[in-house]
Image 1 (tube, helix red, strand yellow):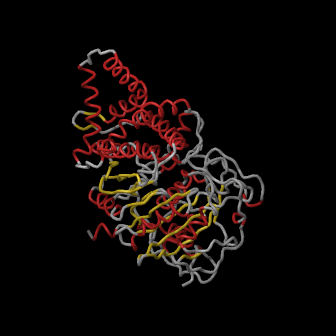
Image 2: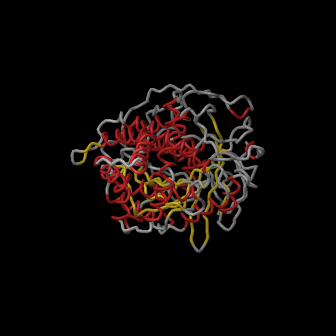
Image 3: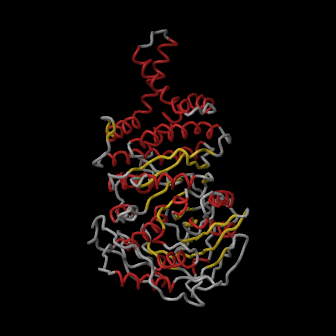
Length: 566
């Protein structure tokens, strides 16, 4: 309805080494959604100056080509902080309106371009850092804390160029750069959010776009289907979906009584931790950041729901070679195991009809561990029955019947009979892979925290565009997407009182006395970049800002923010 279409949403797309085909598909899918263009902004975060393997250009250059703005090496950069060993980073900002097929899409692009000392993948800090650029900005804005240079630029651009003040943004949607969302997906998600104020976050169904590319893609079709319509749908009954995938999730930013949610101190500080030392923590934060963020939301807000919306659909590209599948599932299985351990520590898990969610998580954990043994048990029973002619026990038949019946139930109830063929392929070829080969391989590589063959990049080229620290300024360039480059020169916007969140209740005081071990030296002098254990932006002191001081600070931020000449 009209109320649902008035809710403002940022559509965040972290990207790394994607090429023009993937980026165009994702951007055009957001453009093609039925949700009103005036109430959505595409927010692309490029994780460094990275060139995908075999690609002629870097990912930021592909983004510029698609959206229609020029990459200017003389364009200035904004200082920001980052997680990892290097405490600082720098980023460029572009914004404009993408026009195609008679539709318009407002966009902002953040390109992490790194420090002068970086020669290999400059600016690259990982997907979690890309998410934290936005979550951190929201944390500082909602809690009225000092803003970084990049925060000020983003807030000013949203207000001045894109006509979407940050305090009016109600939802943050996260999709991957190789994901195509359905035209009604945003509308379905926001409708469900507005209908139930207790929903903190929700995800939709992810379908496979390249189903028939190889036998490897074929065996994944039914697995994806049953994981959504059986596992996530069942967890949604409890309001406790244990994994909200980063490729297709929407988050509520605050409640009606102005309690901060995604940007609350506990979630933000825990998710931004640099104290990742043990094998358990590395699996949580390096390999399973999406699951870890879901776990943090569950433990911080036990009274709210994490839901699944089957009407919202997206399409993704899955691995078509077995080696890439091995690499991907090694990360997924190991991070799942460690996140299930973490979920067992969460108190106040919901109970429905005397069934505890925590008990189901424990069963899921045990099932993950015994998958190879269960398959061996099945084959041993088949051998004794078929080869040796022994009678099958009633218990075995009941267990097998329940196992197969539960798998078939989702598409029978939904009348999706097209999945019968995919189910047969899955049972014959997929079960040995997913129940035996992948778990054994993953558990044997639990100390491997690399992305393996999943994300191949070209290491041979290091562009010079990251070295710019000149005054910000560039002439606007109009492409087919009405793209603009950001500039701060020219006229300034008039001073005014900025709309800011009022009467925001502090959710918790977690980490207010956190000390900052980061070096404050200027990273642009060419010296060794500072190294630290706790990110600079985790100093959570509020500074006792009152309303007038906050208005003045944000007004200055908007006055100093980039202005696009008309």
